[in-house]
Amino acid sequence: MKKTSEMKPRKTDRRTIYTKNVIKDALLDALAEKSFEQITVTDVCRRAEVTRATYYIHYQSLTEVLDELLNDALQMADQDCQKQDEDALQIMSLLAEETADYLKEKESLLPVCHRVAQLPKYQVIFHDETISGYVVNRIYQCQRQRLAPVFMKKLHLTKKEAEMLTLFVITGTYNVNKSLNWKKNGTWYQIHSMLLKFTSGGYDRLRKTYRQDETDS
Picture: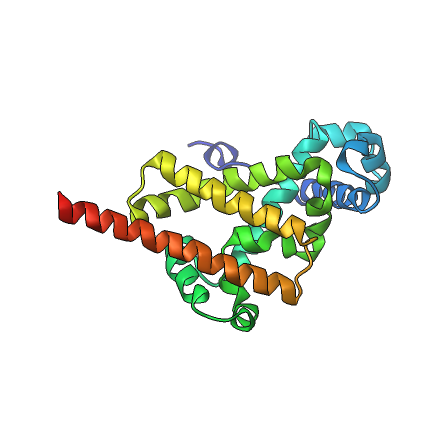
C-alpha cells in the first residue's frame, strides 16, 4: 500500500500561506508609496518582517508576487460576479439597453475585466503607471481563456478573431478606466454605459453578418 503522502499532493501549510500573504500585503503597502520599479526585495522584506532567505523560499522575484496579487484580485472579482462568462454577451446586451443609473445598481453583472480594478485592496496596482502595460496583459492572458471561447461560439469567430476581440475589449476597458483615474463616479457609469451600447451593437452586427453568410451560402 502506498503511503498517504504519495497518494495525495501535499497541501500548503498554514505557515506558508501566512508568510506569502504578509509578503503580498507588504508589496501592496510599498505600492501605496512608490512605483513598482522603485521597490526592492529588501524593502518588501522589511515591511513584511521576514528575512531575504525566507522571501526567496517562496518567490524568485517581485514580479512573481505581483502576479499572485493579480490572480487574487481576478479571483475575488470573479467570485463577486453574479453571472459567469457563458452569459456575458446576453448580460452586455441587457445592460446596454438601460441607463447609467441602472448600470450602477447592476454593476455586479459586469464581466470581471470591468470590475477587477475597483477592488479597494488592489487599487494601488492599477494606479501604478510603470506597470500598466504588464498588468493589462496579465488580465488579458487570464481572461482570454474564458472569453475567447464564448466569442467563438456565440459570434462564430475563428480563434484568432476571438482572441483579438478579447484583447480589444480588455485593453480598451483598462485604458478608459485609467483615463478616468479609476474613479467610480457618475461620469464613470455614464461612460461605461455608452461603451456597453457601442460594443453591444458590434456584437449584434457580427451575429447578423454570420446569419447573412449562412443565408447566402
